[in-house]
Amino acid sequence: MTRAALYARYSSDNQREASIEDQFRLCRERAGQERWEIVGSYEDAAISGSSTILRPGIQRLMRDAKHGEFNILLAEALDRISRDQADVATLYKQLKFAGVSIVTLAEGEISELHVGLKGTMNALFLKDLAMKTHRGLRGRVEKGKAGGGLCYGYKVLKKLDANGEPIRGDREVVPEEAEIVRRIFREFASGKSPKAIAADLNRENIPGPLGRVWGDTSIRGHRSRGTGIINNELYAGVLVWNRLRFVKDPSTGKRVSRPNPESAWIRTDVPHLRIVDDNLWNAARERQIQISAIFGSCPANTREGRAKRLHLSGKPACFSSLRFSHLRVLRRQGWHHRAGAAGLS
Image 1 (cartoon, rainbow, N blue to C red):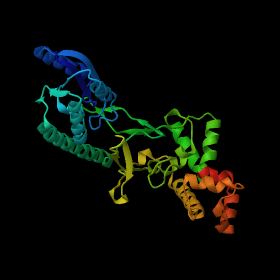
Image 2 (cartoon, rainbow, N blue to C red; image 1 turned 45 degrees about the horizontal axis):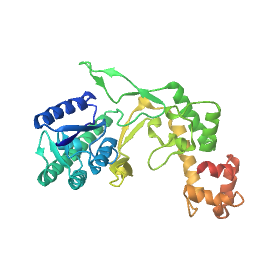
Image 3 (tube, rainbow, N blue to C red; image 1 turned 120 degrees about the horizontal axis):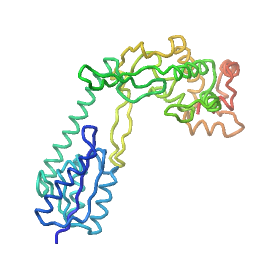
Image 4 (tube, one colour; image 1 turned 60 degrees about the vertical axis):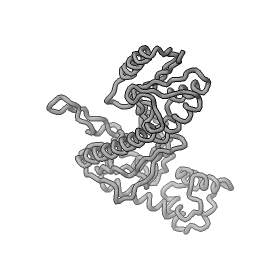
């Protein structure tokens, strides 16, 4: 008796959870026509087909295949199993070694020819989809609408067009959170460390981004990547998009960010979203420049390096190279060498 396993997947908002059952229903009908015994079903809901590594359903399927649980894998189409060319080839080889044939309703029994042609077509589809998505987001940003997630100080503005369809990408300022943003800028510009600012906000039970506790990294972020409260130009009324690009790590299947050159950034003025004025924004920038001038000459300007410099006697190893005037600036602005430097870590 031929033992068959069913696999179904859907990935986007354009599909619905019922799509899984629709795929299973069609597969069960085909199995019934072939008189195959269905011994298991596997699914991945709302998960991209660009990688199999992060899909629990496909991983469980592969484990059971290696244990000889079934000898036919039945799916609606090959791209339901995976759109990634390398993954399709690997799955095909592993299942063939386990004595399992792949059969789909769209292509029939899968062979090496299907793997090569369909894998290439799916890879091109993903590339084309990414380009169209990127182009659509750029158009939205150039109109002053958000091209990404929601940041602290703003909320989604829900509006409908003439046809009753939602208009996406509009944001508005949350007054209470905006006041916290201005407070952070004022305190940072006056010399208070991000760690001390975060500690005071937590002490006052003020919720941070996404309702979490405040951390110094939420405030200082990464200057070149535009992350962190004090680096977000949206607070100054400028929407910056395309600072980063994302690529998939083939060993983990997870996306990792890579900085884009500044020439690729898209900048759009959005004065209605401004929270801090130019004077406050520039004061924070000047404070960052001062910090970079003082600590930038240290040989290991990293989190680990700073921790090592603080290890002995609580004094950074490269403080001896600082000019006396820099130390006076630190003391005047409240940056004690133990607490202040730690606040920068």
